[in-house]
Image (cartoon, rainbow, N blue to C red; front, side, top):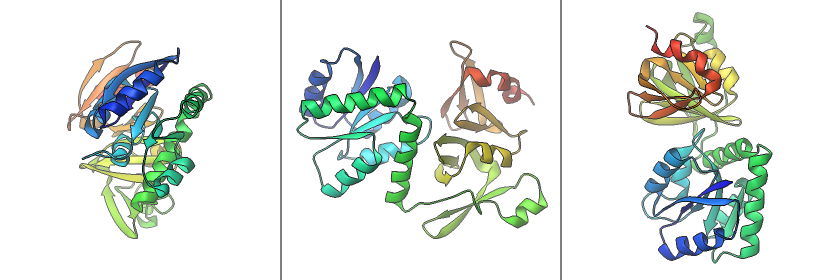
Length: 267
């Protein structure tokens, strides 16, 4: 069963897509959202498999929704658009699929087929990586791990105290201790620190090697958390846990990393 979330500021558009999706036996509509803020909250709460995301919305548009959901939160996304050719071409190159308003039934069926394949063939991770790449391209951010750690810092200590991240030709030095958590999507990582998000290109394994294990703990295959930022820890089902950080952000600790619970609550 595919859990689907519909995001569109137009009621008629939401209703029309809802009716069309009801024709698919393996699609369960888990919610509808009128704007980007509702979409972000719904994705984090309902964990849909697929989101039909409108591009042009007042306030938080489709691009901003993607930016705020980058990393482990991001589900498979199918864009829904009635707008300019530039956006359409960008989506076609980077998104799982797109639907042009008014929605054609055959195109919708094809998009659903691709969503099934993405789930069954574990292509969702690649899709999230492509979306992050798209966000990087549109915001002018292109960062790699090569050179992220200065040679001088690496020589002074095994674990560097800062990351040097290049952003639009400028270099930002991110204090490692200021990092709240890091999540990954394919070849891209989102480093969350002091309310900002820095997109870094590289592997989670490589970054984990650069971080002090006494301070940073792996809680998911795509998430590392600063244990000093963990405010509370509560058990969930099937051996999973939910962590609440000092900034009220909630993260999931998967069953595979249950052995790290003691590291999170230890002194």
